[in-house]
Image 1 (cartoon, rainbow, N blue to C red):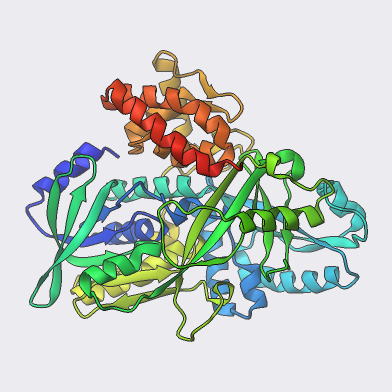
Image 2 (image 1 turned 90 degrees about the horizontal axis):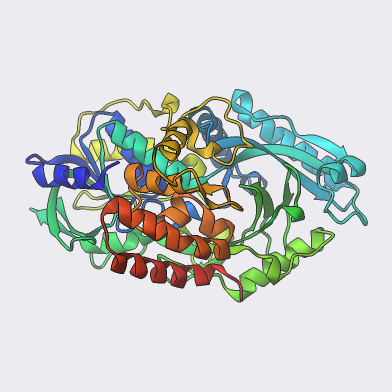
Length: 520
């Protein structure tokens, strides 16, 4: 993934692209893989970094959606369970089986949830992760000793998937490029060009050089998540908004709050959602919330009441209630929910299913959906794109397509497991070049080599790209990531050919950003 080389391809392309995809999150990258593996000449443009928005801020779960089962949304659960199984098969270095325990403080809770989750297992069929089982109080506390034991009657264990979202996004981008695609980050689409009422091109600006481009494509796909309405209005200024934005916040705590390998799932919170406490990279991610937002932002901020709600809810179930000072990082993400037809629907009640819209000019928009189902969303939308643009209809091959980094049975106790087959190459790089085998952070187990690797092979362009999405330092421990930033800037400047001024600017920018991830 060489940005300079990709830009040259755009400049020298003397023919139209078959498909231009706007947006480099889960939806856009999924569609890009689907498009390139069908043999379409495909270009993906992202205004910031890949997975900068929603796609790097999830609860880190690949799941069928126990909550959707309770809501009676059987078709979404079936689709998600199938895709969950395929994702573990195609990216075993990133998706792992995660055991969850639902603690029960009523006599009827254990049989009730055992019954519901057994149905969940049956729906997953051969692609299931494991059986749901009732646990006694003693066994529940054996696996999660930090749970409040008073009035605890037992628990139910069930299985879902756990993953690293932005690492999957980077590996998907690499998979796309390996299949002939061209992807460019920091390339902002600023307008569209029409001919006889049909969209024929996009206008884009390279935010690094300020150079502008008019790029022709037979099909334009808008996959910009919470920003889809912005792109739609470039095509139809009076179009109605099709996305409702909802914010979800997560707090990251040290492992002591939920030691061991089991996650906790609280099925009923005071706002009618579920609350998860999930082990992730030797920390625990706790969340989430569901708050309506009036507008989409690239860097949303957690509201005080969201932080208080998570701490208070977690405190009701844990022997040692987490305090603000225990929070290592707080991050907020925005969900692009397909706006419902009825007015006043609460965001937690809006379906997490996806929606495809085709405008009169032929622009296709994909909205809604969730990480787990990205592949099915991509298959569906590319069928629509091919039909709309008159491209040759081709069958999807992504069900069994291995994602870049594929590695069977990775050692999940290894802090670099998420690199999969790339790990050996990073360790080789660490041993070849001076100082690269030293720890950038002993606490987070990040090597200097990972920074150089990210800039050289994963299109990282800024300190934030490295500390937020190529490694997960900002999300795991915001204060530690601030300490790491100067060294990251120095390594990147050397690799990318920038001067001391660039380093200083990058450190300042990153420190300003990281301040939002640290609770005061």
